[in-house]
Image (tube, rainbow, N blue to C red; front, side, top):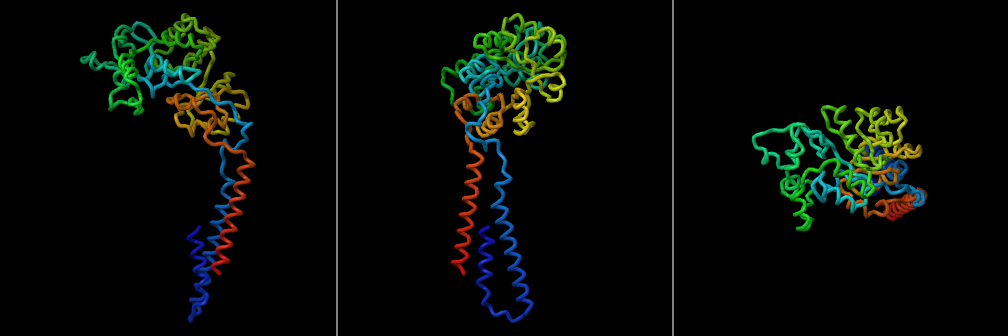
Length: 357
């Protein structure tokens, strides 16, 4: 904008040049008009562009929705090895309302916590290669619960090359010692912890045999004595059967169409798969919306303003301290500032032009 303005003023200053050839005069006038038009067009675009800026945080403070609840993604994986009891205990200090995890079943039918399946199964987060150097495991059913318990599930987290969030340096020596001695937890261990602190549990079920593994998982949950309403049931494969066996579970869907078809009211989707307008619309219909995985303050702020019910996060220790979104402004205040800045900039340009003339 400044460059165009300088060009315009420069051509105005050259009006006293003695143009001897008429074509030069026409060329000069043509260029003068083109620059003037471009200047006006760019100025108008800049002055009016705030009209097209949309943000869910352009709301009055008294209209701000409730702060989204925090779900600990595999616990608190920035503070402890993922899917370990240390990780879930650290997430409790964040005030999480749900533990998010991943369930698989051992050879002897014990549900345990582990995300990686088939590819990198056990090799990323345990010392399985050192413990069983001559064997290669690709499925949970390859090992018994006793064999799984013999693996170390924390040492990897402390190594420089595998430090997933570059956060190990922030741990105390005592915390590092605790992390170094972590093992693979069973689902029952997590359920007992959740029951003790009244925290919900939501999980994916990784299984080549969904029917049998679902039955054993549901059986373990019911035997634990946890309040059924604390179970946010996400696996879709055997949902109808689970609903009959455990009607107290809260059914959570990862597909809006399926949720509507089944008469559900809990949705769990990736944050970039849903617009803020859609979130706001669903919340107005009393649909509970959880978004995953949300780690940054700015993103959490936008989803907060949009009315998200909860977010699954790796950084619960950072988001728990936020008392309000990082940025919020009432629509009327925004418009007032926009008009004031536009008027001021117009007056400055007019004054410079007059001064130059």
